Each structure stands twice: as structure tokens, then as C-alpha cells.
Image (tube, rainbow, N blue to C red; front, side):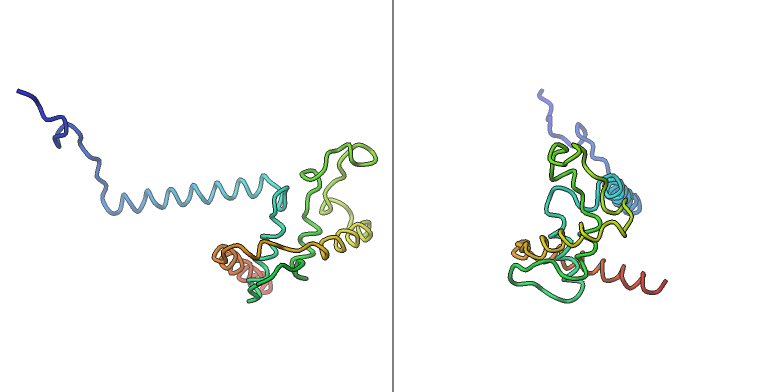
Length: 156
């Protein structure tokens, strides 16, 4: 007599109660939040990708401005882009006069950065943000978070 390999007894299913399922989901949410926190802390605010453009769009959405055509970075995003950009992802050390990548702007005294900021700002004002063609859901959510963060910051 052949036994049925697909019978219920040969493959018991693990079942969870509703409260156990809810706990597992919260555990996954917590682990995802820790993952985001670690990667946010471990990597620079802006790196070699187009993060500056993404940030600019999130700030625009937080202002209620939905961009339609490529444009330069908005005035509110510009100080963050200039201060927190990172050169080591864009150029090799050999391209600098002393063969070393200079420290990031946020680690330098602000009074020494005037000429650097002026040159970088002029460069960024010429650049167009082509990320405006991307679907808006991500930017709308990120813009909402930025807007709420600005509100909390102004309360302090």
C-alpha cells in the first residue's frame, strides 16, 4: 500500500496566533528601522549617487512645490547640499594638489569655506535636477517627513 506523500500529517504547518503574528511583524519593523539607522549613520548624507537631487526633490515637495521640469536645486536645500556633500566619492586623491582628499566641509571652520561655497553653489545652480521625472510617491512621503521635522525644529 502506497502512502500519500502529500497528506496533512507528513507536512505539518506552523500556525501563529494573531498576537504572535503581530509581534513578528513588529520585530521585522524594528529590525528594518535599526538597519536604516545603521546605514544612515555609517554612510555620508550625500555620497556618489544622485542623493543631492533626491534630497532637493523631497525639500520641494515639503514646500508644496511639485516640480514638472528640470531645474536647479531650491534655496532651502542648497545649504545642506553644499555643507554635507562628500568629495571622496567623486574624485580620486591624486586629483587634489596635495594628493589627499580634503576634509568634508562640515568638518572645516565655516569662515574658511566662503570661496569653496561660492564656487560649489555656482556649479550647483547650473546643474539641472532630472529626477523630477521620477514617480512622486517617495518624494511626497520624504517631503512630509522633512516638513514635520522642520516643524519640530521650530518648536524647540
